Image (cartoon, rainbow, N blue to C red):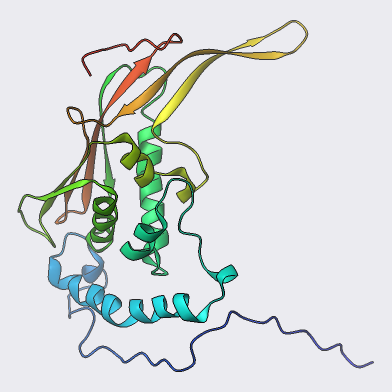
Length: 252
């Protein structure tokens, strides 16, 4: 009995007249050891060649493929939630690798922020640390600055020294840490409830207040990044409110 021929699934259309020339020099310089060139603590000469090659050779071709070679139903949706479609595409989410990595690390930051808004946490400052590779954080800096974050280079060693970022508007922060980058959860606010179970087995939730992230002129959301170590330090103020909407500390 002859075998049934399998049907080929049509792939997305592409560009047929495109060639990608090879780099004119090695993307990663010679180093001692296998992992040396991947270590975030290394200087800019370990990251700039590969980053430049991606920007000048791969990224333009990929963006042209997105722009000309794909029908609308194949194109990514950059404008989910409160995210700005043009900013997301221009600053790197049109790059196949960089975009998902930025979303992943911004989601990790958002989850770390949300975990410090629990009911047991009082009003005041919260601090935590994350590790991000310098080559990736350069894209994240551009993304956050396009949304409205203040970016200040304060010198130091590493790929681009130490960077201070401040977000003074909660709307800007919500766009940067938008839950649409992952599972849709909101990371800058948390509601608190008490759960009551009735004799009939019904569960009733009683609203007891909320905790919000503060991002204002006097209390900005702050990030300090040291490119030598790849360490990101995040500091922000949280404000607790009772069930009547009264703030725990009115000075913040």
